[in-house]
Image 1: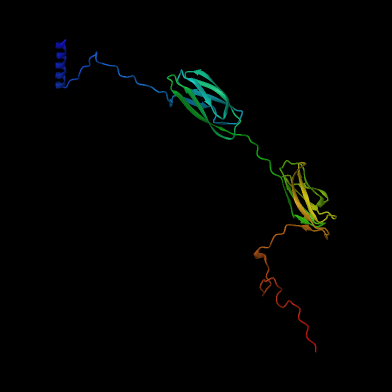
Image 2 (image 1 turned 30 degrees about the vertical axis):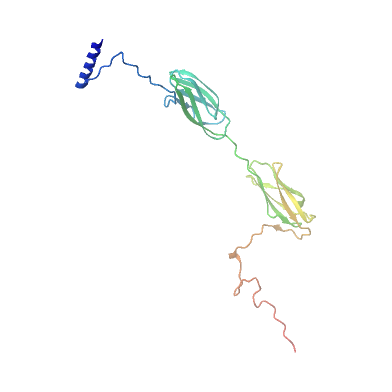
Length: 269
């Protein structure tokens, strides 16, 4: 036994001296540790495709999933989808359908999750744009009077604007003696003339505007009793500086030009 160990030592020294490879002895060899594998996201091994890129709530969307055969727990989810159903179609393909949920207008993410045959996590995604068919807001009716005040007999212009499909419009006020009918131009503009009642008293009155039989606005109108002849009351627009007229040879001071005053009587002795 000692002789065998001596021969092995001599062979080792000779090999080192000659630069040869050192042989491994089976008795002394130990297996190397096995490489460990921790599951993680399996990038590129799964895919998710929707049949459409956009739709409205209630529409049906087709779903196609590609993943390694033997994958499990495949699930497709999104805030924009409901009633999601998928099943195997063979050759690593899963297909199904879903309905677009009643969500707001906008783009939503759709995600696929699952587990590959080797235990790795599978992930993939797509996007879906939801378009809501929200009707445009109804036009807001409006009322405009040519003046917010008047005297008995004054004629006040009335303009009401509504949606084009409105069938009737009018105003009513005690200041005008009751209802004032308006004429439609066919495009949602109603016009007419209200006359301040002869027996109206000084004070404030409400002018009630109606469109399609429903009241939509009330404005305040003031009156002054004891008016004269009927007159059209129109909004007062101030003059622009360029519209002021200057008397010739004088300065626009707001006073009468020189020489326009009557001459003083002469003193008689």
